[in-house]
Length: 399
Image 1 (cartoon, rainbow, N blue to C red):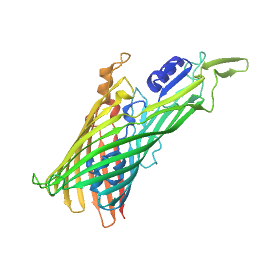
Image 2: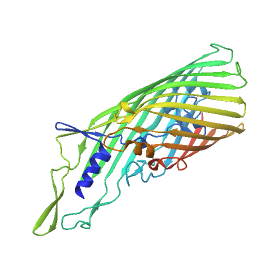
Image 3: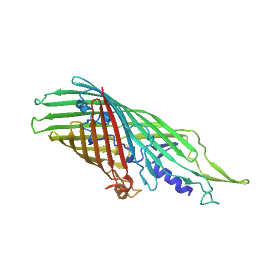
């Protein structure tokens, strides 16, 4: 039983490499923790953003869509994925009470300045309760432990955009945007009687273009944009509040039996690499109350983990304006992460990792407030490891 637990610990959770006397832990276990930052009542739209709370995870050039000063905040609930990742390991979000994102923008003529905060990666792997066994008591000695491994990466962003109106036609606008991020990683692990922590800061950035045309070449509003996101890289030392070469458990007064070795190494390090992303998409409004959006992005997973291959993600939405202050949306979002590993059945893993979300949303505006509610569910057509529900709510204040 001890060997099985240790093999699971190494192979299925930490994905480590022993380099001499140094052990390197990969803090990004599976794509499950890569948060759907751009979810809103508009669907999954990141190139022509109208949700102020999502600005730090969207095309920085799309700040041009905000004509007044705004401040917004969102919360995102994600149900437990069980099983999630491997076997009976459950996948949750760590720190569920933290806001998902915050955003604020201030316009100055053709210039926009924004600040934002967003959870980039959030993963809590819960193995459940594991019984402690011994040779004399293979079914347990009456005690247990609960290993957990959690990774949280939050981005703090400064955004800037500048627009060039009537550059090609009378009613068009071309915008350029840049975003600088200071990202924070926190990693915590709990295994038997050893607790380890690691964390620190890194930097990342994104830049993009956004073009909007209103009835110059077609009957309705048309927006198109693309932006590139550079992921952040963390390499931090691991700190332990307890570590020994062997842990003993006394079964009776005259005998002791070693139950498990506690992992020991002169130097432990934690590495985390969020993937680069290339995003592009458009919104088309054939008439004033109906809108269609299509977005696609490439996620460069292999720059952080050679076993994970780059994958493409697609989303589409239909939006309907019931009134000038009320909007509904329906959409789909799909992602099929791919892994190639000779030690595992890659085809089976890929089948269990694919995910397709059905999304619905409601957008309400008043004189001073904007309310945004969205729901995404992946139970209809997704792999076994990716079935869950996401509920996101946001509120913004017009200043």
